[in-house]
Length: 179
Image (cartoon, rainbow, N blue to C red; front, side, top):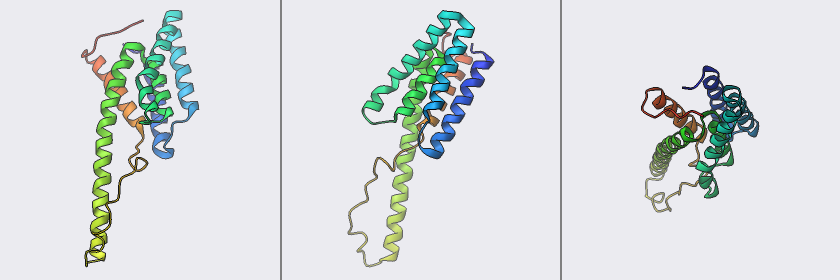
């Protein structure tokens, strides 16, 4: 099971990332870098050189799990670096589960975001129709939702996926993987 220090440091990293991503729509490099360094230090303190290797392997897995989405422009580099930092805390195999749960949480968030944007677009259209009752507003083309409008702070999905992974592991629904 994870140590209290590890959980506190990981929770702090995720809270900072969620806050920054929610406000500035980006995750700062210093947060991910500090998180990666902290995860590796905790790994080394808990398990020596094998613990450090475990943390570095987790960081590599976190990076590899999300980098295809960055390459396809489905998420930002900060999201990938944050998942790598999370991996340094969890180790390789638990990071795969956390990344999978993160992608599910991100998918749910994406659907909710698109539904909200579509509803807002319909509301704006109905307001226009109310202002111009002769139907000329309805004759215009539908306003497309751009990919920029559909953005949301993916750090939230990473935090949810990570928390679910840790919770499932704590409940014994995922096997223990130790260095």
